Image (cartoon, rainbow, N blue to C red; front, side):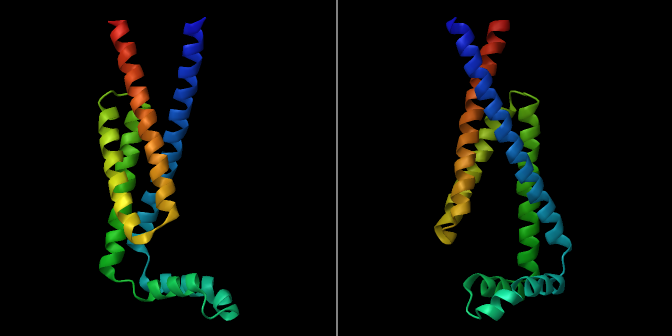
Length: 166
C-alpha cells in the first residue's frame, strides 16, 4: 500500500513537472516570436503603434506615467537597443525551448544542464531586478525556482528507476 501511495505522489509531481515545462515552453515561444518581431519592426511603425495606443490616455491625463514612458521609449529607441532586445529574446527563448524539449524527451543529461542554465537565468533576473524592481521578474524567477526543484526531483527519480532496471 505505501508503494502505491508513493507512486501516486510521483505521478502528481511528474504531472506538475510537465505542466511547468509546457508553460515555460509557451513563454519561450513568446520570446522567440517577440525576438523575430523586434528584428523586423521599424522604429516608425513602433512609434505610430505606441502613439495610437497611448493617445486616449494622454488626452485624459497628459502626465500619465506609463503612457509617457512608452512614448518616450519608442521615440528614443536606438537600432543597437532594438538589435540587443531581438537577439536576447531569440537566444533566451531558443535555449529554454531546446532544454524543455530535451527534458520532455527524458534525456538524462538535459536535467543537470537545464538546472544550471535556469539557475544562470535566475542570477541574471535577480541582477536585473536590482535595477527595474519589476514584480514580473520576481514572478518569473519564482517559476524558474519551482521548475528547477521539479527538474531536480524528476532527475533523481529517473536515475533511481534506471538503477533499479539494471
